[in-house]
Length: 183
Image (cartoon, rainbow, N blue to C red; front, side, top):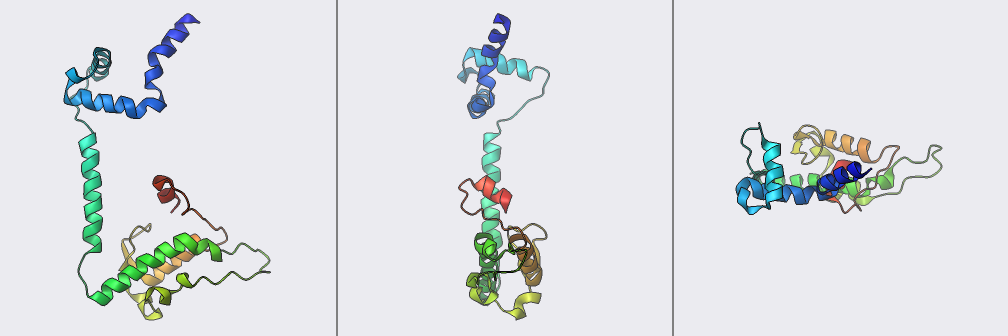
C-alpha cells in the first residue's frame, strides 16, 4: 500500500485540476529552463528526451486569437452600399433573434391544441428585410455551412434548428464555449 501512496503522491501535481498550472510552468521552462524549480526542470527534461525542439504555445495561441478577432472585423467592414450593409446587419440580427427567441415558436404541442405565440423579432420586416431579399446572398456569419448563401436558405436553416419540434433555449449560458457548442 505504501508504494501505491508514494506513486499517488509523486503524480498528484499532474492531475487534471492542475493542468493550467503545469502548462504555465512548462511554458516558462521552454523560454528559460533555469527559471523553474530544479524538480520541474528534471521532470520536463525526462519528458523531452528523444523529442525534437518545442516552442512555447502561449504566443501562438494569442496570435491565433488576435488574427481571428481582426479577420472578423475585416469581414464585417467589407464594402457595399449603406443599404447593403444595413440589410447584412439585419440578417445577422435575425440570426441572433432566432437563437435567443426561436424556442418560443417551437412546435411543442403534438396535438396542436395551442397556437405558438407571435414573436415580432423573428419576422424579416423587423430587421429591415423583405420577401424580395429572400433570393439575395448574404454573409451567414457564424452559422454552420457555407459562408455566403441566400436569405431563404438562412431562414430555412434557422427555422429547422430553432423552431422545430424540439426547442433549445441556451442563450442564458454564461460559458461562451458551451453556448457556441449549442448554437
